[in-house]
Image 1 (cartoon, rainbow, N blue to C red):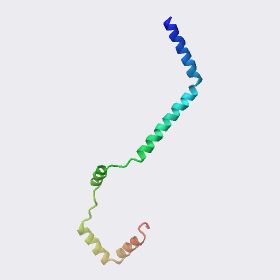
Image 2 (cartoon, rainbow, N blue to C red; image 1 turned 180 degrees about the horizontal axis):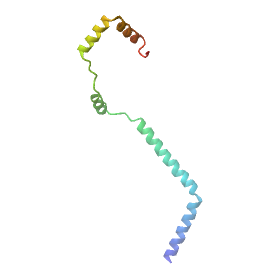
Image 3 (cartoon, rainbow, N blue to C red; image 1 turned 90 degrees about the horizontal axis):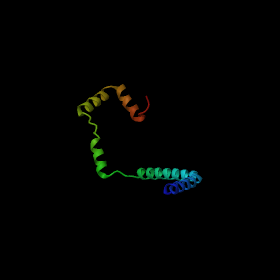
Image 4 (cartoon, one colour; image 1 turned 120 degrees about the vertical axis):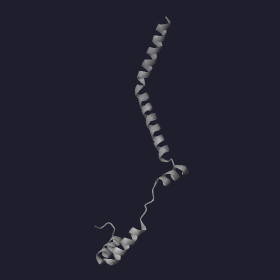
Length: 97
């Protein structure tokens, strides 16, 4: 008789859950969205540590321009009026072609 009583209790539980299944689904959905929103908010406000900033700064290579090349370009600019005007135009509006 115990298994019959267990079956009856299970049947009562299932009928009670069936009556509120929409409410339970909406509650689970709301909890899911709430958790995702909370994680997005937490992760969007996270700041990197100083060690992480330093390691990324060391990874970036500094551009190196050969001084001989700078001298050569300066000499060419001084010798040619056309090149000098191109440099002047580029200084005034660097995005114009």
